Image (cartoon, rainbow, N blue to C red; front, side):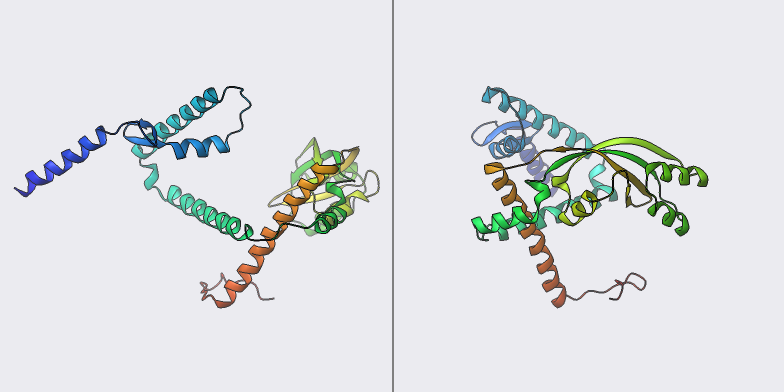
Length: 270
């Protein structure tokens, strides 16, 4: 008898799933999975589309969501959602989402920057505004040497040719390339160092086991003024407020938190 009841309940659930209809707030159903108007509106808000016909844009975005549902279903049938790799990435993305929403919520209550604050921000970041430039770079990318003596020689070079000579002499493979950067992306302290380098002198940037030696070969003025400058300044101030909020909250929360480390994983002492 109990088995019959269970079968009836199971069948009723299956039938109810099959009876779902694309109506009201449900704009589509893909193999029993609903796509709601809220899902569609969120995707529309995140999409960049210059098409003139709003209906065409909405239809295209909805088809994108349908395709995503189908791919998600296939990934689940392959068991990907049960793998450690997926679960680890899901936790990380969930953490990032919670942190970003916390920052957004707290910053909504912050005061709008005053005109004086905006003017001070522009004055303290000339590389983003009046002095903004596009720099064309000549670069050499190479594996970062482990020998401190070689690192010191490269750091003392006065030209890319000097760097190449050292790399050739030590058998380090390199690639030469060009790149363009916007000075608005540089912190003011870094900009001041690079902007006043002697002509042709390289600067070195390292990340992990890779290094890049660069020389500024040309500079193109690209200033931002007026209303555009004001909006950029507002965004920059909000970014700085977010970074300061994070730093302050972590410091305060760390002071009252109980944190234990496995031996060998403790943070370095100051």
